[in-house]
Image (tube, rainbow, N blue to C red; front, side, top):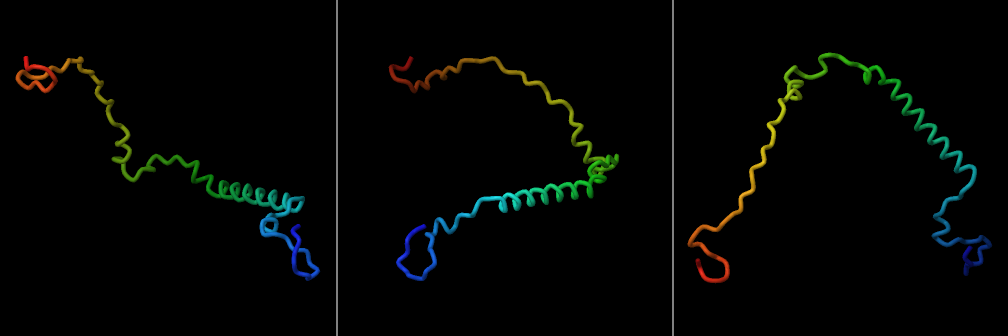
Length: 100
């Protein structure tokens, strides 16, 4: 604790120490209870919507055409072209030296 210049009889604490929480058993219980509530909430939401998640209706798509998008044909194979060295055209010499 930091000493104070006031004479109020109460101990004073600096700002950093005052902002820190206390550790111990009560905080552990609060954290454990909070995690338990989250787990119970997820379990309740899952059991509430489990039937909707497990449904496999044949006409889930808006229309049959929506499902046809995924039946695209195989893409054409890629045929790489052979490498050809590029030569500058005659009369357009841009490099150093005399024009051939």
